[in-house]
Length: 124
Length: 284
Image 1: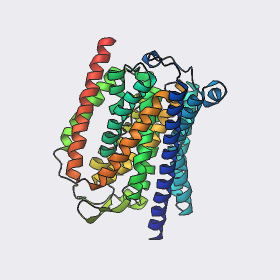
Image 2: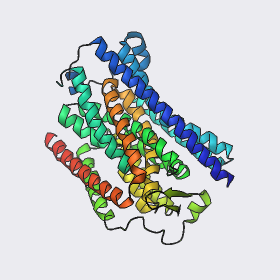
Image 3: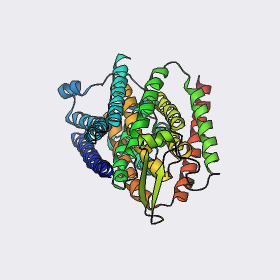
Image 4: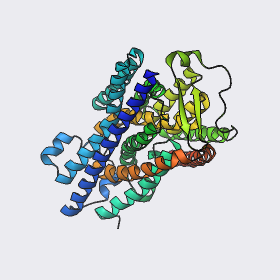
């Protein structure tokens, strides 16, 4: 029954982590959109009318050349993208604490598959 | 109005609140609702809409999952185990995306989804776990218990037909990687129909898995340049608010209402996908 209790604790730890991450990315998005309105940058709907390929990829490139609203929005985006990965990592750790080797190994396998998929996108 | 940044952002925001509420209530990412509205109403290129959709799926999943986890509706073991199948499927789907025609896949998916949704209408609410529990499920501890506020009773369950559930999950992941959707409807059908989990558990567990599967797809789309933060921000914010509202409603709703809402949504999505297929075939 202690295993059930630990699983319950894992659920609540994950809930706190997810809520915090979601709030953080929402705040960054709201701040970025506010900065966009304050800075009154020119906006062209054509930006989204035709897909132009990987021209504006990469937070690092933006940190050097992007506007402050672009950088803030991108940080919010990256926060959001990391949440499912953080979820898996926490699951792996707590399954390991429960001495559930099978399920901690399964969590690590899923993490590896997500990482592999990201690498495949870069190769493409 | 749409040609100013605040007008465009506000329109994306409104569409996304709607998608977030619907998506969270039935355990789908919401992106599949938002994508056709962004392209149809705002003239956004489908590539960017799909990119925003993938991120919004992660937002919905993470936002609603926090509530589901607190309600003890999510089964983490079942979720993590089946994520092996969904991420593997997403990987294959992303690789296959360049080799298969989108029109045929949209049509097949829309057709399969519509038929399955109609078939699920014939089932009684929360069918009792008929037949012997799966030996594999028992060995892996794929069981649980939750309190259902709608009936005021504790519900116990054991998963059944784990290999069949995993196979359907692999297909869901494949479609997710291929089309940039959550394919949460297929995930719910695997957990609910194939594995015999209570609808609320399957919806919450599906939500848990959708985020991880979408993260696998998002990696590909991010490096492809399909994810633009200016579009993603209002979409994700709207989805977050909608999903939050939806997750507050969900534990208080009776399964029958939830299922009817799910079937109606699935049929609308089915029609939308078949329409997209015809449109794509004509354009080709």
